[in-house]
Length: 181
Image 1 (cartoon, rainbow, N blue to C red):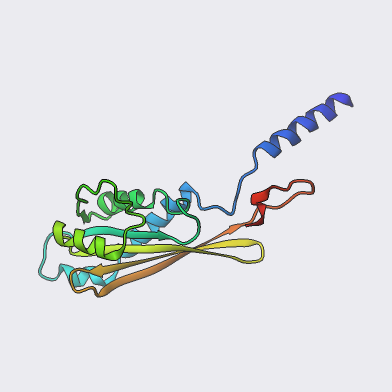
Image 2 (image 1 turned 180 degrees about the horizontal axis):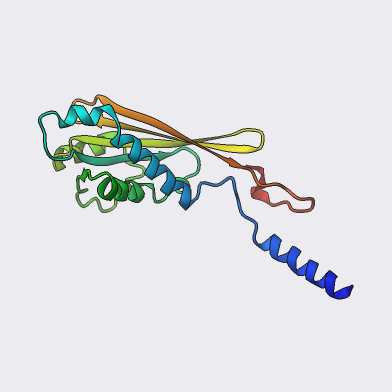
């Protein structure tokens, strides 16, 4: 009997250590969002219009990606995942960013990226934002992306991806200051 209670205590202790925050945006969410968005971008009508008269893939610049949910949290790694998907899966060309030492591209405004597009010769700027809202037992993340033709500024493609994540269940006696998200 004591052995069984000891085993149960150890399992309960380990379960408490392995708590996960299901309501957070995670690395696999970033990969899913990048794969889904680039797949939809590559199927868009704008691409057929672009290819009429051109043989090479369009030159894109990834512009501002704003995180409206948590500073430095949700969008971490999205730029890199988008670059990887755009280059290797969809076969687009990407404009190189000039040496922007000291510039936080996550906080840069659209004029900064317009200037970069002009310098690099980019034909399109991909930009977006991540928003979140809390519902009864879920937290919903909405990633909105748009492709802007440069230099005209016209939006030639836009899409929104939504991901709902279950809020973690609070067990009696398990309360932490950050549980009230």
